[in-house]
Amino acid sequence: MEILTNQDHIEIYDFLLRFPQLFVSVAEISKNVGNRRLYTEDRNWARPALRRMEMEGWLESNAFGEFRIKRLPENTTHFKKAIGIPGINLGDTAIITADDVKRTPNSPDSTQLFKNPAD
Image (cartoon, rainbow, N blue to C red):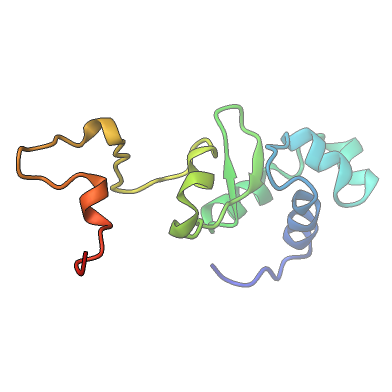
């Protein structure tokens, strides 16, 4: 991603920073960013700028054509937190529970694993 240099893009980005988790409609962005004359002439004046910012990787959109700031990938050490975030990529992961582990006749149980060898 490059640095934002266009004044409209900077104002749009600053406006969307107020709603980091929410998708905001084009009309709402057009209404709150820029001067009022732009909005009265065209209620969707911000759409080309939003699409450009999306193509450059600054924003993401949903199926309804609403926009928000694109999330940066979370640190993988916070896996439990990432599970609760819809749409986040978990990569090649698997969740293994104690019920998934099969015991064999020669496998140690948990009491044998933590015994002191001197005992």
